[in-house]
Structures are given as C-alpha cells and as structure tokens.
Amino acid sequence: MQLKLIYFDMPFWRAEIARLCLFISDIEFEDFRITSEDNSYLKENGMLSDGTLIPFRQLPVLVIEGESIAQTGAISRICGKIAGMYPTDIIEAGKVDQVIDTVTDINVLINPSMRESDPELKKRMRDDLRSDALPKYFGYLERILKENDSGWFVGDEMTVADIAVWSLLGWIAQGVLDGIPHDLSKPFERLTSLYNAMGRMPKVQEWKRLTYAYDESSTGEYNYHVPDSI
Ligand SMILES: N[C@@H](CCC(=O)N[C@@H](CS)C(=O)NCC(=O)O)C(=O)O
Image (cartoon, rainbow, N blue to C red; front, side, top):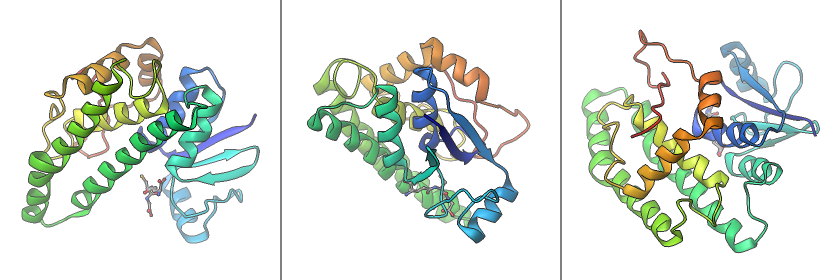
C-alpha cells in the first residue's frame, strides 16, 4: 500500500499520530515535509506543485493509493487501522475517537494565543489556559485513564488515542508555550505515567532520534525538544 503523509517539518501531534503509529508498526510510508514554497503554492492552488490535491488547503494530508485524505481524525483512523492501533469494536473505536477529538479541542483552545500579538492579551489568554482550561481537560482525560485502568486510554494496548495525547503533552512539556509551565500535566498521575511509559519505548526513542530536531539557539514555539519524561 502506498502511503505518503504530507505535513510541515515539525513533529506536531496532528502529523505525529500517523507518522508514529506507522513507524512503530514498521509500515513503510513517505514522510513528506513541505517547504515554505510548497506551502505558498498549496495555499494558492489547493494542491502541491506535482498536482497532489490538498482538499481543504490545510495539513496534514494522507495520500493513500494516490487518493488525498485530509483531516487529522480521518487520517488517524486510516493509519490506526493499517497499524493495528485502532479498535474494530465500534464502542472501543468511539472511545479512541473521543480522545482524538478532545486533543483537537485542546489544540483549538490554545490556537488563538499562538496568533495573538498583543503581549497583554496573550498573557491573559495563557493565564486562563494554565489555571483553568488545560487543567480541566487534563482532569477529564485522567479520569478516562483511571476508569480504563490499563495504562492506556482504550483497552489493554496502545492506540492512536495514546499517541495523540502523548504528542500533545510533549508539545507542552517542551516549555515553549510562554506562560504555560512545561510540567503543567505532572499532577495528573496517570497522564504522566502514560507520557513517561511512551517516552521509554525503544521505537518512540528511535523515532525522536531520527526526526526531532532541536536548535538551542532558537526560541520559536515550534522548536521541538520533547523530553522523555515529565
Ligand atoms: N481540521 C483540520 C485542521 C488542520 C490544521 O489546522 N492544520 C494547520 C496546521 S496544524 C494548517 O494547515 N494551517 C494552515 C492554514 O489553516 O492555513 C484537521 O483536523 O486536520
């Protein structure tokens, strides 16, 4: 099966769900990372310069057997099924979906503060995220982990839901979001255990070694130095 995952050259959770689940399961795929020229072209034309369709002019896009599929959730389900990290049972599948959709919601909550240029407003947004919105969502996720009680969000094995949360927590754990402490999720014991267990996995460590660049001189919000543990 021909698989090509198109995203920016960064390990953001929206792409990492697909990349990491395929990598962990030894499934070959093309990890296509676009340049800023590619991005300008796709914004203008809704496709890459080789004609690859980018349906909503947003990334990630998975090209599977020549067909372009957009949307993080849809891509997660396809890659999860291929990698054996998405349940066949419809209820279990729904439990995976609800976690992925919640990671989307958390991402959408953080987004406005990423775009805010007024420092005062940005600080207020980050204060709210730190003291209210993020702990609230971490609590909801913690409770799901507690109820499932296997160390994973759904069933007894790792699914794409775990990868989504691991990658989101890794974004925060870098400490690159001004006003959000890197260890904000630490009081949530089960979330922290999940994060640390994944950080110890040899395949995860190998993936990070191969693809996570860290530039000490850069202070950008996308400068990934994802710690193995919180
Ligand atoms: N609904 C989309 C959202 C994807 C999205 O927001 N992608 C961002 C990068 S993380 C993007 O392409 N931003 C550029 C833009 O929206 O113009 C999904 O679930 O994948």
